[in-house]
Length: 118
Length: 110
Image (cartoon, rainbow over all chains, first blue to last red; front, side):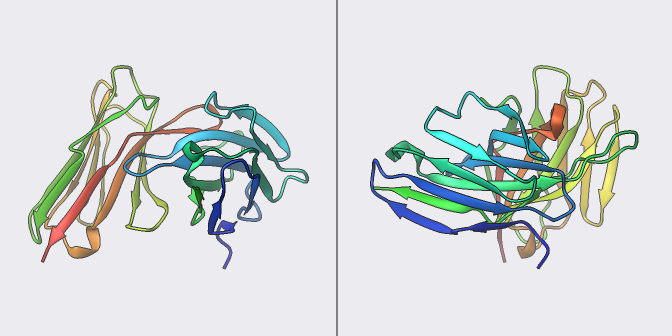
């Protein structure tokens, strides 16, 4: 399967613990995005990378959240000292964007990592 | 917060009936993308609209972008049970960042 891969798919943790999610994008895609989705809402943007550079972080992303994409391939999203309000589906998406030609900028989403904080 | 408003939040139709969801913005949209998310699934890209007044069709789905580029709609003709899911519109910002609406949940009774 050459789609976006996320793991773990489900994570149950106790309040105060740290969790880390991993995303493997489609291999030729240069952009990688993290979104958070809660029940009944659309995905909310958290952050995105172009290659290994983190270009934007949402104000939703508190200091407890950190994301990396060290070699411009896979990415990790770490949440420290989890709170119950962090419970959500964390979606990763990737896209390929190049200058000089039109592209839809279509995002390819992974299946998500569902976090439950008890 | 979300800058595009979608209505209705929820619609339950009889199989074979038509369905329309609307996406509205108070500001001019540079473009609009539509995604479908099946229950328990992830968002899947359907289409992008860029031009004022643009209309695109995909089989039973018709997508429109308003003349003022402040609204968009998705119309499904003769719904089928496979159309079940949540339909999201999203504005593509710089960096291909998407700002999603809250979505319209479609349920189809067979």
